[in-house]
Length: 389
Image (cartoon, rainbow, N blue to C red; front, top):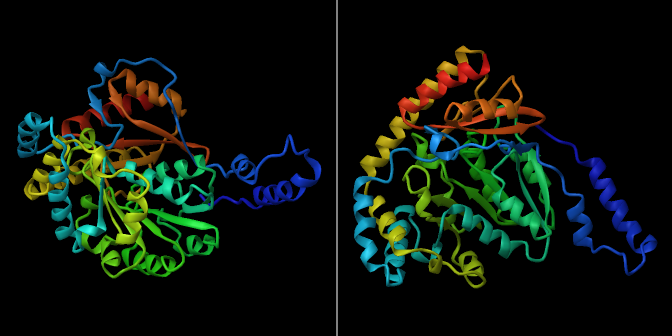
């Protein structure tokens, strides 16, 4: 998946060097506009449905990495009871949740920032980091929220292909960092590949690179790992490293529609964001009460992890029997290349009531399927066989 950008870099430098000489002042492009026009393209492109479908007919919604079992019953109760206090701001509840998270992560409350989902926090970090340009280094393919926002602000993206086993190529990423790099982004486990990067190597990478520029580690799917504590980079924050770690209540907590997440970072880094964008004002009291309750529901979270793993094992075995190569996943989804046209495959699955995502990666169609209930996954397998015959 490595991609050469030497020719594109040559075009950039040529344009920047010739612009002032050959273009009239009225027609001249700014440096940011020129860089933006020649951004590298991702190896990852999503197929957008070009057909009409009725959402009500989707019997197995396996497209958005949602937890089919949540929220937990006690979370639902807490949210229901919180509705009556919806006329009040939730600042006190936000403070309570921050204290709970800080205790869990082994840092002070000043190290925590809440937001309506981790994607919101990714984008807020991008707004603060790239308002004056610069570049962002990340894997390709990866979750593109922070990269897309950075590019929209005029930053340059420096993509680095994954290794043969779909881990982050940490050496290449470290080499890509230069004096213009404002942020390095790592999604681990990675989305959309579901793959993992060795935690010992990642900790070494974060320790070294954070001396030059902040490293943002997105751990949205961390809780699906059996040994999550050994993979998290939160300990580096406690050690004083300029590392930002994102978590979310959208995945294993089953609160995707309630929109709440958090980042753990140095207090100065948190302040650099909150001084420019609002923090807890974007959260509603129902979501806060729900998250507080969910923090206490460890048995529910463990049960979700167990069921997710069972479904992942089942689908991997059944699809592999058909001759497809599935990337080993550590998340709540699986991805694998398919042999038929991506748009036809997507339509066939949706026509049978199965919602999935289809990506084009390095000019080949791939199916990404989220883990639903076991009943839904059995239906997915049956439908997959029917559509791909």
